Length: 377
Ligand code: ATP
Image (cartoon, rainbow, N blue to C red):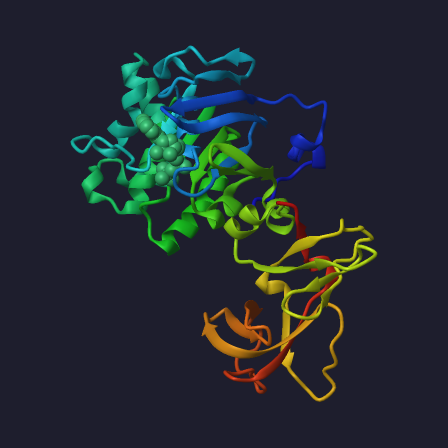
């Protein structure tokens, strides 16, 4: 997650009702035949934000990005950037640039020429192009590779050239379509941080499309989870992770256990279908009827079931069925007495655990009431 400096409202202008949005999507709609690819989407994005559009394949995120770039014309709605209505402006006249997943570098040109190409086409004098290219090369730490051709670069280096090229013209808005999709996991993670650093250095507003929730959580100031052309939830990464409003979002963003049950009389607890009783706390009264609670694997404590393990609220009993040792953490699959399976994630703080929980062990699971989220939809 990014950490922005400054006062809370300067760093998080969406919390300040007097702050002016920089990019406004107003009631955007795009249909392809019977498909509503983007269905009445309105979003306000603030200057210098790194905004992520996230969702599974086919949810409409690329169509939305393409409308911002001007490659698709909305059937309805408006796009306003810095007060200017972009809706009818063709792509090449918009103060917007898009970086594609394929990078689309010119294979016959060296790195410096690739970066300077757009500036040259605009008629910028050669000496200024050269200076700007040098500035961009320094920004992405590729000064030493200026004379290489794209096929003499690694995937990560090509990605940085594409980024430098798309920033060279100093766009008001940079759109990134799965920019790290071609990189392997390790490089991808390192590049995510680099991308955030560059974005913060320049202060350019970025909108990124990704289907990778970890990536969206790492790079973005805020994110929108899309579902069938609409926004299922919009918020800061921690809000969407810690307080998903629907089962769809809870399941899409990270691992989650969904506990089902019926609200007990008084509305303070849920009698779980898996046995036991969950008390979410927080003083909230739940409406009568069925309820679903989201509980993240890392919020659950696991311990050997002892003689004294009496049932209490926010506790379940089961047997360890599977353990995945991931080095930094272990994932336990625990079969409950009801037959359901629960996932628990524990950080491996000690190098060798003396009393390690192992397969077939009877265990007690417990969590804090505040760790549960009541799902609304
Ligand atoms: P992915 O991650 O797979 O790229 P996405 O979330 O970006 O998916 P879109 O590409 O925006 O989704 O597509 C949204 C919906 O619109 C899908 O149902 C898709 O089939 C449809 N669609 C997109 N472009 C067209 C098109 N040119 N013609 C017809 N249907 C289209």
